[in-house]
Amino acid sequence: MDQQTIDTYNKLAKEYDEETKPFWGEVPRTFIDKFVSVSGQKVLDIGSGPGRDGLILKNSGKDVVCLDASSEMIRLSKSNGLNSVLGDFNSLPFDDNSFNAVWAYTSLLHTPKNKIGKPLEEIKRVLVGGGMFGLGMIEGETEEYRESSGMKLPRLFSFYKKEELEKIVTDNGFELVYFEQFKPRTRVYLNFIFRKL
Image (cartoon, rainbow, N blue to C red):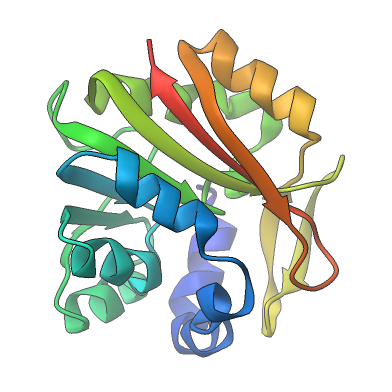
């Protein structure tokens, strides 16, 4: 994740937490529930933020490790009782084959399109064979710095078409096993579950 986006999250972590906390009450729970049902025991939540999804996974009985590049997000995540690690998804601080599943919900959209291969390579590395990868992104075609989610400082966003993103991930050694989309407000969310080949 680029430094400007990390700085924004560090400065506005509380505001982001308040803005996004109701998310899974406003959209269908089918995607995260499906991930829970297929993900195995040990789950890495990449770009976990303050731990919204990590708590859902933990309360579903998963052994969850949260990772975020923002120290303020990690502080909030730890305050929620989650096992939380400061780190970069381009260089995950975990051994090969460490997790049954990886969850990356709207975190990899902060990666430039021409660099998305690196975190996908790292995710594949830390997953066991046949491990599951839950990926949430937002539909679009642009790559830009913008303000959103009540945050008045810019963050980098990379938006994708479904077919474009599916091809990128499958070309990196995964197969698609589940897809759904929803539109809670103005943006369409693309929700994928892939399996490591």
